[in-house]
Length: 141
Picture (cartoon, rainbow, N blue to C red):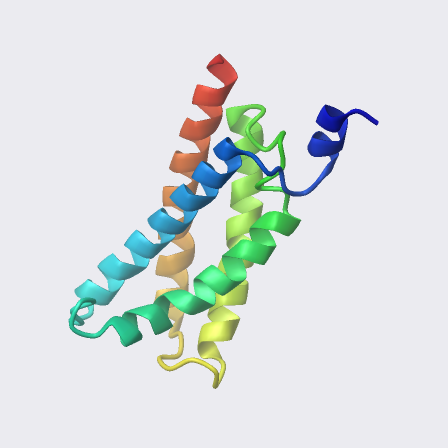
């Protein structure tokens, strides 16, 4: 099996583009959660631990779910349609895992149902737009 075929068959491609996309995913999710923290009256700079505790369940859920869903595979950006389908499934799964973690005794804050809808919906919009744009740019090359 050639190196290219091996890279395409895996769940995670180790290359610069994938690392940049992963960093973009995490920055967008962190930004979304920081905006939420601010909207709820917490200054993320004054209370970084509360902010980190808000972000941790979703980051801890996103990384393995995204990898298992093939969101970092070499062909994840083959077309905008494929990228959007993958990120939709991946985010909805990761958001639910994150909400389960956040509702557990391991994290402070809980997760009331309106928060569940907001984080799932806004996270989906942000990631779909981002991943669709990445795939559109990649398809043009």
